[in-house]
Length: 182
Image 1: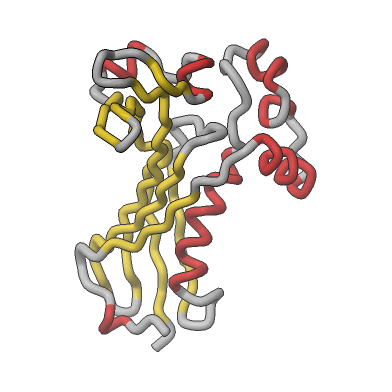
Image 2 (image 1 turned 180 degrees about the horizontal axis):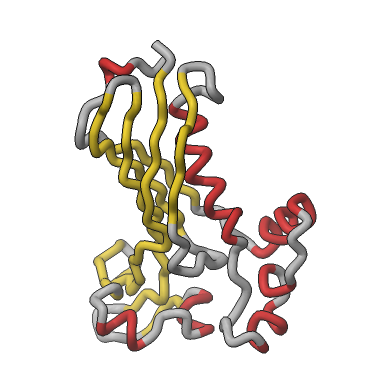
């Protein structure tokens, strides 16, 4: 049960999803009725200039609404009053999708959030000499651009296998308001 007294300004609610696959996007296309082939067919997506399939925008948005549905236990303890987001970055197969909502202010029974959905896109793993020992789809297809590098979105970190290169970017920023019933 979520109580207004348990929510504090600055508090972060977060979910992560790491299972974005072509099969899942095909299932989503079938279920949603959005059968645009840029979401299911690499050849069509490439012809459209996308370097490979991208997730449906509403697929990604669903994780934002899921965060609030989970918090409110499917409207048992409150309602999602407003959600305003801007879809800026593509979500791709293999991405880690991180959805966060940070409490910005509380007014009466309404809680205002800053919402941020971030993608982590792995490119490759290199050994200490700079040799690629594993390449992910993003590296193979060139999902990470020079523009990403210039913007400081491409990072590296040491992992047991070597040095991982990845891109971290905000795909969907926005705001939300919930109202607690108590």
